[in-house]
Image (cartoon, rainbow, N blue to C red; front, top):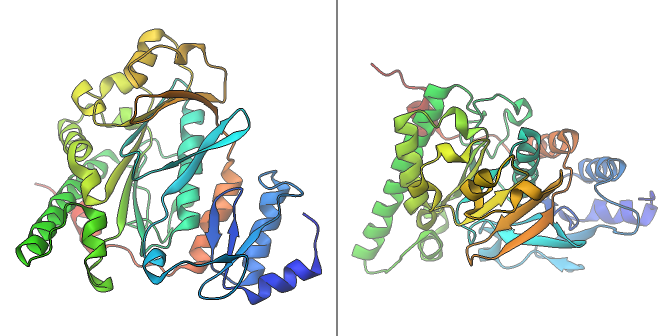
Length: 340
């Protein structure tokens, strides 16, 4: 992308910049945004001619910032990959829980990283909180990310189990809030309706529970019980699961059935494809390709972009520079508590 003086001057006047190719939207100092755009271009994630779009909250420009209500709602549409060169988008909330499987850990982690970074780039911590569990300790650069509920990636298994227990309790707490609202005369059935009927200070943030390498937790009975409870009921409470596992067979069928969206990279055998998708086909995939099965039962083959670690590190660092850190004390206290 050429260094165009008019573009630089335009960035200086804007409060928000949108990069549609990656669905990233940041409000920041123009120097930070310019550095981000240049770096993404150098890494091949933005190409000459795509350009960047600019959004001005409450102002006049190529894009507007939307209504006050929209700005306090989470933006959960992400790009999963492309099909024949056409981007494939999906709303995390509408897709409910997402299960990612396949023989190569690198492919699963890359997709998880790209989805998380797009969500981070489009949401403030006021709208989106992430509870990130990674027993394999593959993602140290997320530490201190303002979107993380605990300010860290939870790596050791005992604390990861307690994190799932906390999430299950938070889900039930939210259902109690819905009942309280109903008792006061306002009928709400889910997270979206509750927030629409609540004052700003009462609104709940969307929580995404991201788990990489779940197979390392699968043998723990408490973890399995919490995952099943969350998979069955959490979406209505504004809590969703994004789970990547190298051995989806270790997740009970009853739990897997509550993952409405399944993504399978190449598998070694047909039975592995069946465990992830409920049908064969993933054993025939090439590296970088995946099959995605959506809630309507349709299956599409998509190409997953190579979203590198350096790009993710830059996006996380940009978020750290923009947003203040305000981590959830109740979650931290519960997860760090000593058990007898």
